[in-house]
Image (cartoon, rainbow, N blue to C red; front, side, top):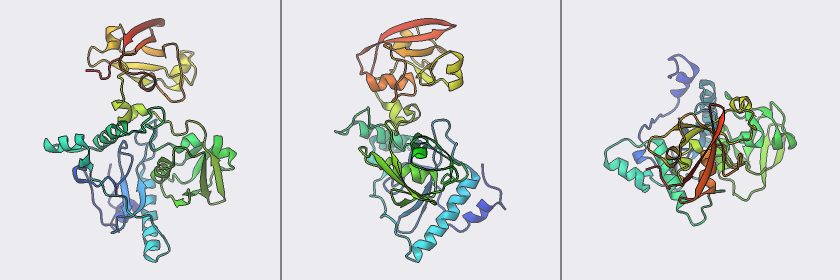
Length: 342
C-alpha cells in the first residue's frame, strides 16, 4: 500500500534523500542493524551513518501489528527534528555500527552466487546459524532476540508506540500509567517501537532492572523471569533449531484452548503439515491433530507451542511420547527425533 500523493506522508518524504533497498546482497547489516524477521524496516540516518531512529516492528500476533501510515509519518517527523537538533549540536548520537556486510554469512553468498535476490529472512537465517556455533550459546537463554515490551506490561499505541496504552505487570508496579510517553530507555532516546525493541535487545542478559524515562518521571522496572521470551516459531532461529519436532504446526489461540478445556498457558498446537514422511507422521499423526503434551508435559514458560518445547528440551536421537486429540479422542505417538525433517 502506498500513501496518497497529497497525503502528509507523501509530502514529508520529499524532505528526505530516500534510498529503497529490495535486495540484501550488498547491505551493511552492521550499520543497518534490525530485526530481520520483520516485514518492513526503515532507518533515518545522517551522512555519518549514525542512526536517528529505526522503524518497523512486529509482535507474536501478526507481522503488521505496529505498522501504520500515522506511525511512520510520526517517525519521519521525529527524524527531521532529531536531525535539526544534531546539526545544532544539541544532540549526541552513538557512532555508526561496526561495518559488516551480509555476505559474511555463507548462506547469503550461496544465494548471491545463484544470482538470486537476498531476502531479509535469509539474513536472519545466517544470524541464527552463527548463533548456534558460539561457544556461549545456550538454547534455553540465547535464542530470544528483540524482546516485546508487552512482556514488561507495556502495551503501546499503534499509531504512536511511545505512548502507553495500558500498563500492567512490572510496568504498573513501577508506577507507569496509561497515557505516559516513553522518552528514553536506559538513557537513550526512543521515537518508535523498533527503537524500544532495539535497546531491549541489547540489554545484557544478566540485567535485573531497566531504567525507563517518561514525560512524568524516571522509572526503575524490575525485569521479570522470561521477559525476553517470544514465539520462536515465527523466527528463523526457531526454524533452524534442532531437533525437528516431527511435525509442523501452529499454537492454539486462547479461545480455541478454552473450547477444548485446556489451560491458557498450555502449549497446545495443531499439526498443520507433513511435507515428508516425518517421524510424527510415521507414528500415526495427521494434519489437524491437536498436540497437548510431550512426555507428559503440557506447558513451559519458554515455549508458546509444542514444537519449540521439543526443540528446547530434546536432542536428535531422543524418544518422545506425543499425546494429541483427534475427533474428541486422545491418541499418542511414540517416535525418535531426527535433527532435520529430511
